[in-house]
Image 1 (cartoon, rainbow, N blue to C red):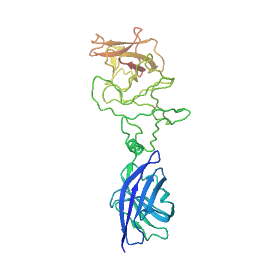
Image 2: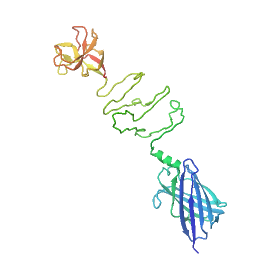
Image 3: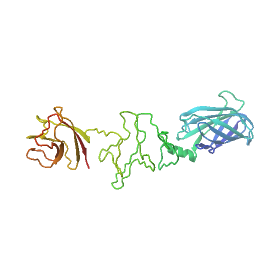
Image 4: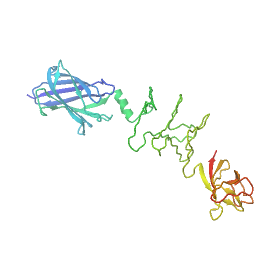
Length: 351
C-alpha cells in the first residue's frame, strides 16, 4: 500500500551568524514507513549544528535514520553549492536528533540559498533508497545574518566602537582592509556639489599625540599621502602650525614650486635684459608670490661677487624692453653681470 511521508522543517538560529531555514516539505515514496515529521533548528559557522525532532506515524521516532543535505542557489534547478552532506545511522531518541553540517566556507555569502533534504531508514546503504523532499527548504537569515549581508555591501550608516593597540605595535585596527591586488583598498567619494558645507570625503580625527590620518609607504618610490585636485587645491593644511616637515622638501611636476633657472645671455633663448646682463627674467608672473633665490653655480665656475635680489616689474624699465608683469633676479652691485650658464635655484610661494 502506498503511504505518504510528510517532513516539515522549522528552524531558529543558535549561532551569532546563523542562517535559518523555515519551510515545509512534502515527499512521497512507496516505502513501508508511515508519515514522518522533522522540526529542525540550525546554527551556522563554517560547520553548523542541525537539531530536529522526527516523528514517524505521528509519534516520536526512535532508532536510526539516514539524512542527506544538498545546498542550492535556487528553489528549483540552479547550481549546487558546496559538497553533498550525508549523515548515516543518525540516532533518534524520543524524536530528537542532532547532526553537524558543513557545506564549506564560501557558500554562504548573503545570497539566497535552499537546502534539499532526503530521508531513508537507517538500514539503507550507498546512495540509493532516499526520498527527496519537495519543495526545497529556503535558508532565511536571522537578524545577525542580515547584518552580515549588509556588511558585505557595507550598508550605511556604519559605526563601530572598540579598543585596538594599533600601529606601530600592530597594523590592525577596528576595521582592517587588505588589498592584495593592484586596486584601491579604500575609496571615499563625496559627490555633493554644495558650495557651503566643506565636508571631507574621508575624515580622521585624533585626540592624542598621533595623527588624524597617517599614510605610510614601504616602497622607496612610493608616496605615503597623495593629494590630487583636477581643480582647486591638492592639499590644504590649517592650524596653529599649518604644516610641519621632518625631512627634505622635494618638488616635482610640470609646474614645481622650486626649479632651476639657467641664465642665457645671447641667442634666441636669451633671458637677460637688453643692454644689461645684470638682470635675468624669471618665468614667474604672480605679483603676490614670494620668491627665494640661491646661486647654484656660475657659468665660469666662480661665484659672482654680488648678492642677488628679486623684484617684480609691472611695467618694463628702460633697460629691459618688453618685460612686463614678470619677476626678475638681479645682481645688487652695479656693473656685475650674470655669466651665461649661471644656475639659480628658485623657490616660489604663492598665496
